[in-house]
Length: 109
Length: 115
Image 1 (cartoon, helix red, strand yellow):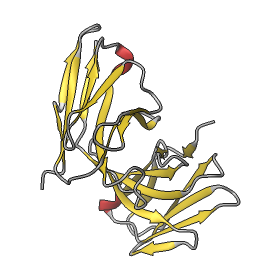
Image 2 (cartoon, chains in turn brown, orange):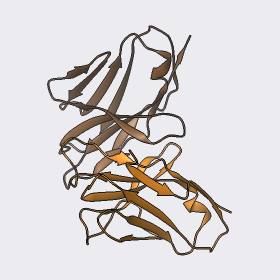
Image 3 (spheres, one colour):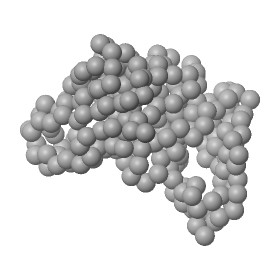
């Protein structure tokens, strides 16, 4: 079983839609959680951290469920520019970051 | 605003050839990393350097060597390339090992094909 698992997608949604991705992690001792965004043929960039109480950054909402060992990312009012691959990232003991395989989002006009 | 710079951006090798990927960062970060990215596999850590003078193996170190030349530069060497090493390689840096912000700054990637 992979340490961090994501549905690869693609998720095809119309502009203005709300879309949500989940990510599960296997190590219950994982310490911190993040979402990265990667545009096609580009490098990954940090989108947002995920806090235990949940957090928002504009149209993006991240949630953590430690009991079930998953994190989620909700995107409201999708824009064409949101089309990208979203990487779930988990910080393990020993400070290393483990990346999921990514979920591809395509927002259509 | 250079950030993390990797060279070369593209390379084609024959099986058995050697090459070195170069990486430099200008953000005065302590920690540097080499990842490879393959379809469906996510980014996998090859080697990292928590601070100048130290290097450690990551998840997939076999077939690679690294050198932390100074605080700015961290190179990755393939001594005898194999087709299984065909991948996109990313160098990254962070202020501290496992920075609490989770923020790694990545280079643009190096696309390597081994025939």
